[in-house]
Image (tube, rainbow, N blue to C red; front, side, top):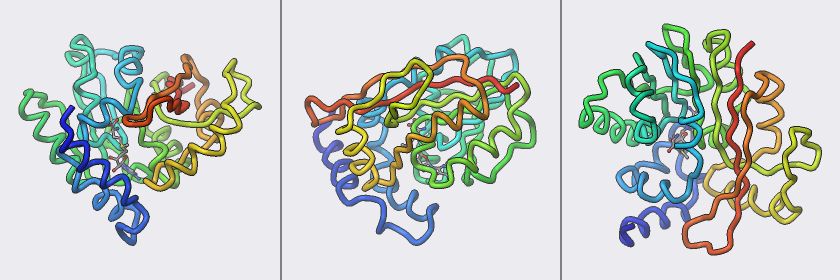
Length: 243
Ligand SMILES: C[S@@+](CC[C@H](N)C(=O)[O-])C[C@H]1O[C@@H](n2cnc3c(N)ncnc32)[C@H](O)[C@@H]1O
């Protein structure tokens, strides 16, 4: 942990995302440009469950993976070595070119030739080949038209392919997946808190995912935010299999 790095990230988070551009793409790039180099160290403590999600996935030989809102390519660091060896193509799609630069440097430094960075919108971009795995790690909440991103992903996910999501949420009382509902405080507070930085916590994400692609694995947990002792932000890990 480096305090100067953290202060740079925190000042960006305090500024918020709303006023940083006129389009969503512009807002994403402007929001992340000043924190691209510091992103990983801070998010390592902010975004739990990514390594667990990747270790729960089944990678077929010659796997084609699409990492939507893949940012700096941090997921490639969490990927078990056995899975790395099976990946033929890893498309890392993001609107923030500054984060993609970090991802491309990471891929080059590690000799990960199968990584292709793509500066595009997850709601519309499609690969030229079908995918075995589509991944959203803490990106669904940053995509305003998240239904379009899921629908688009399911168009190019192979039948039997895995859709994997890890993200913050709030759990409604109506969930019937054996999940514990979030407290009234959490349901009221966290969506407002995160919205400042363009992170849109929707109770509808998980039901929509499960309706479109039945879950084969679903876990819930609570994240502690850096510099906020006692904080417990609900998050989930979901893997669905396309029928
Ligand atoms: C919180 S970051 C998560 C990055 C990475 N997946 C991780 O786990 O560290 C959310 C990412 O989603 C990207 N993003 C937001 N909207 C997007 C869209 N419509 N299409 C592609 N990427 C998008 C942002 O630029 C950002 O890199």
